Structures are given as C-alpha cells and as structure tokens.
Length: 101
Image (cartoon, rainbow, N blue to C red):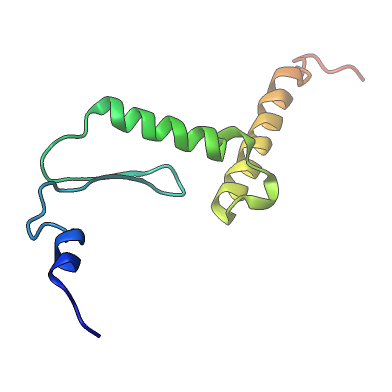
C-alpha cells in the first residue's frame, strides 16, 4: 500500500495540544451535584439549568412507591404514623374531673 503526498495534505490531524479544558456538571441519582471545572467557566446559572433539567427528567415528587429505598419507606411510615398521632390529639375526648357513677 502506497501513501502519497496528497494523502497527508487532505487528512487533518487533531492538534497535539488541547486548547480547552472540559467543564462538566454531573447530577447524581439523588440530586447531588458535582462540578468539574478547571478554568472556572461554569456559572451558577449553568448549575441551576442542569439541576432543573434533572428535576424535569426524574420528577422528584412523581416517584412511584415501588422505587423508594428502604430509608425513604421507613421515613414515609414515620410520617404517616405522626399524622395519625397529631389527628388523635386534636380529636381526643377530654376527661372531665368529675366522675359520674
């Protein structure tokens, strides 16, 4: 296989030096955000946009119960039991000090 001078003239090689450093915003499954930015190009607005995109795709309040973790399930049970206790205190009958025989 022969290479000609025209081959090397038409093929463009990537530059040997990287002219930019990548800036990356990673939003985890739980909503935690990690920013990799060496030059400081990412602004707070970029982070807000990335988080709002994550919320629109994952729907924080639209999570089915089947996808809850064990910790989230236990917290949900505690919340429901707490609501029942508050309701029981509100609607509980007051005991009178006079006893009727």
